[in-house]
Image (cartoon, rainbow, N blue to C red; front, side, top):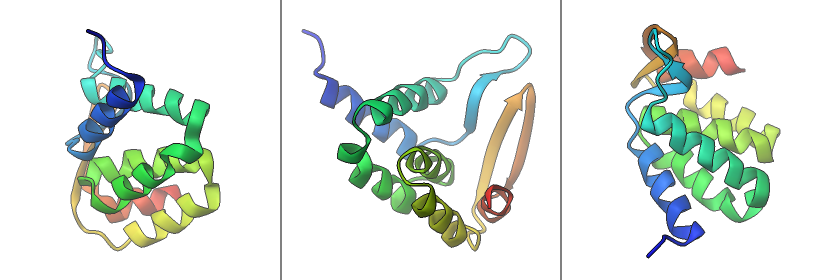
Length: 120
């Protein structure tokens, strides 16, 4: 029995809500895609198809997700409403929670506040 698209979207949202790493592309020397990156990409496609219907879940993710989950949430929200995303980055610019990011094979740790400030 296959999952319904709504079930898949909810599973991806849960995965991002608990994410411990932000990686929008492949990581490491071999460019491996992390499960959380795949979840982000699937949600990005869902947002492109039916974003307004997903907006409440994205807003929840921005407010209640892990620090990495919040980054993913705001990044997805930006596709629907850039002004709302800027406001979310402003709110997160005071959050001192640690977030781990990957850019290729380079891992970095910073605070959510630093990451948010770099997005403004």
